[in-house]
Image (cartoon, rainbow, N blue to C red):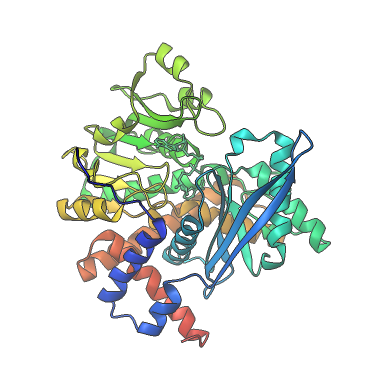
Length: 432
Ligand code: NAD
């Protein structure tokens, strides 16, 4: 019997490890390092919620503000049963790098609640969202920290949160939260922003590598907000084929892949997917999709892999099954690659578009949304998407420029660009 125990993936240790590695390469001052290795502020609070059966259930909420040297902390709120303080810390730290890499005047934060939202009624969800705000509102605000949706949270939930915040402060405050529904302070283009931004970076990578996108194929992990619009963009904007997508089947409590060698019909799959990103297996099978194991997506013979589900998905155990044909890995999710797997990808020379560059489209349009909300003036859809494309293209070029000039791996280059900008702001503000 083997006694080998797989290491437990701790996203915060991974985030600190990535930072340390680049801090060494940059010879970063020890005082600056000690500020940036940890969040500036962390909050953990109880959220008692009256359930539909009359009982009170206590949930645990988090908000972590990693750094706000460049502007108000910014980052989503995740509702997930496995949420931990370390997950939130890691995501907050990655947000600092993400807003800096995209050159947005914002810092990094993240929040969460330990809960499976699919187990709550609509009323319970609303009370939990309002309770989250009640527990933390004094430390939020358009000039302090601006939350947004993430895994398990929706525009409607942001609408309730904005309403609760406005009630508590006594004035309409749409700029306090982004990802709100259109018609209630939301921005056009926010829904597709992250997936669309992923595809802008893939397009730029292909242009740089001399790849004809219309002849390419992709396999995607996940079929939630990011994955759906990345899939749509891969087909519609790049003219490529998506041959596999996967999801977590919350009824059967396991991951599953859906394959079609001649290319999936993204809009059809969207029409049979629920709000949590679970595809209806029976309907997909009836439409001729191959139903395969959850990890089948990673082993497909494709040009592009897009992990767009959760952190810690490409691991030492499965990185070896990536096909030699894969030329680009575009990290739509936050932290999808463990440090051990990252070493393997780095060594094999695959072109990696690191998470906080690749998925910065969401926070970019969130930033546009808070600008519009603050001004109470809303832009046309086309203007949002055009500005998003410009921002993502310029962020990609900035990181590639760094990778070329210092001859470093794309993840390290993204860190270098981001750390440089954050440190400059800290110096200008006299923190160090
Ligand atoms: P989502 O909840 O809409 O979708 C998540 C998807 O992943 C679902 O389809 C789910 O079934 C699937 N999934 C979960 N576990 C899986 C597994 N083991 N195998 C296969 N599929 C699995 O979430 P989202 O908003 O699309 O976010 C996805 C990732 O992108 C997260 O890492 C999130 O932090 C990151 N992200 C999201 C945004 C955004 O704007 N939504 C922005 C930046 C980064």
